[in-house]
Length: 400
Image (tube, rainbow, N blue to C red):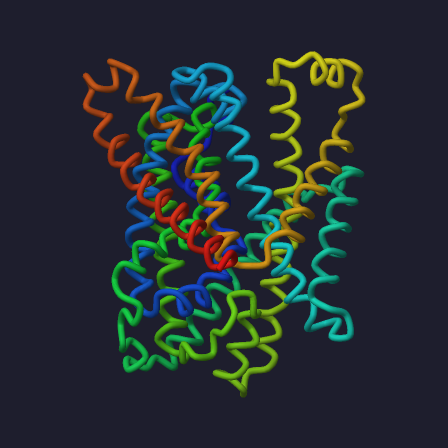
């Protein structure tokens, strides 16, 4: 069956597809609002951090090639309960992220339906996507290819356009809020890299996986990191930061004021971003419902086991419950920074809890591989701490 194995190039593309998502389109405005031009340095740090984490998770996927990823990894040292907690944390992080993407969808749809509020449009889009998933309408292979094109087109087109209007004066002041905000911005930047963990579990389908999966992850992280850095950097170099008043403002609206003579290109970018957002939410609802079903099966509770055994808890119920949870995130969270902080808290917690497993293995210490694991835990912990700090600050500001 070796002829069915894939090579480094294909594995690299799979890794890129897993990482590149519509969440990157919130980054320029957020960088401008909270960091300034120095936000570019946050991308460099996150690329390094994600590489350490990806190599560690790839090692875990090789050692434990079972369905359940975070649950299986953390169970090795924390037992059933803690494995369930880590997997649930990852699941909650995904739901929160989809709440933000749904709000973004509403903002982009508002350009086509100006008489309807963005809030209503976002809810309507989410309801339709949940309905489609309940009845098994998932993206085909062609749909997945269209989705990645819709994501890459605005990234590349915007980068090229903005580089033609570079103005070095926009780089000053380089760090108007101080360099401490550069590290704090990692909780925002990593939002665009979530998904790399999916590519870490390719061992069963890659030639000589021990060597090629880590290589593919390295290539995909470096390529995606370069694309993101160029994208955000080109916008910072060509656009006055004062135009970014709200991270949820469609990027196309800001580009329209910078490039007034390219209405059709701006319209195309707007449509492509909207398509990427809709496609991402659609795919994530399906994958999240699958994860939710897996979690319910892992719960050692008589009520949960009876629901599974009775077949009442089927794919439609799972999708409906996931949709309700996303709706809760959508309605409850209004602050964009809270979305970023909470998503990072839950998902990065699952990463850290999983990587700890490698520290409990004597063979990993003897081979010296745990150096990468330790660096992964350190960098992930920094992002986690900044996310917790950001969450506390946002809550405190609401209380005061």
